[in-house]
Amino acid sequence: MYCVQCGSKTTVINSRATGHAGKKMRRRECLSCNYRFSTTEELIIKKKPAPPKPKRVRQKRLPKRRFSYSELARMSEGQIAQALEKGWIIPEDLERI
Image (cartoon, rainbow, N blue to C red; front, side, top):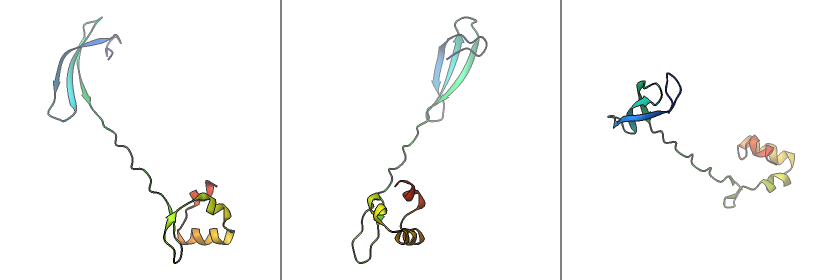
């Protein structure tokens, strides 16, 4: 960390945990101008987003199966319009073809 007065490197004089989980308070001193100041440091943990669920195609009287973009390429315009209307596919799926 750098000094807030002159911008030189600093050293930690004192370090202690605060009452909050993941927070530390540190007393620092500049190596060139001997200015002392306090900093608080907090650990931030970012959660990974959940992986997307695989898309499925709904068919009459047949079990569900995985969605494939090759099926969209074989569909007629009327079939694609019907699938969009019923919510089986979304416009972003058409952009991936």
